Image (tube, rainbow, N blue to C red; front, side, top):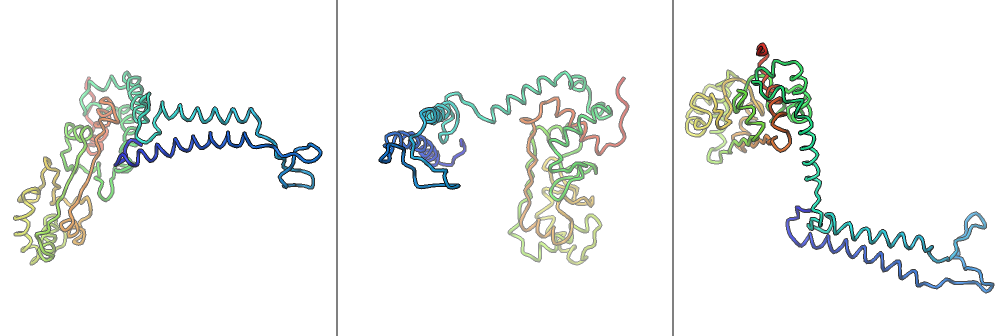
Length: 308
């Protein structure tokens, strides 16, 4: 409840919580004062509800043990809301949070596992990638942290890069891969509202021609000029891309969102946004080192011999 956009909602939740507990206490004591109705012969009157012929619901007072348990439950609720989060954005006297608890448990686990990873921390990425046991550990890390987007086989999907084909938006060196894991990436392909629909179709045909895909020669010729004026700054004059910007190579037949004319037209018209979340808050440096080696090895199948 700490992410309210306004203090009004926080106050509303806190008020509802407190009023609910106070109302329960009031209800308990108000019923305690209710008089028990007796019949003429002194027996407790029933409520008029009868089941199975002789099973009657009597109008008896609440048992004292039940009343005390109910009252203690209300007191417990008030104490809990003082100590822990629950009253809107109030963090509680103890300052407990599920995020903090998770981070603490992760830190403890990382410290306990440090001896397991210690052997590989001092090794180069290429050497780690050549170690069968390290690859198994890296694969488990990948399946836990990366497979949700890139697939269990790392083959990717529309909008999620294939990590096995050797085509890298930000470079495929061990250093670049590790930087991506630590800091994440935010890729932006801006829309081009200054271009009309004809120009966009022309440049889409030109882009398809760069990778040898079927294209209309006349449209591609016109699109070449559109490309030079609007696209070359990021993708380069020859369409080879730029790993510093994360601008894709348009000549290699590898398409993150698809290479059809309609898809390219959509990309140029609306733009694209992609986010690779940083892993430095989730994975320890030792785990990132192992994961880097595993990902690097996916597109470098010739495993070098481990250093002696």
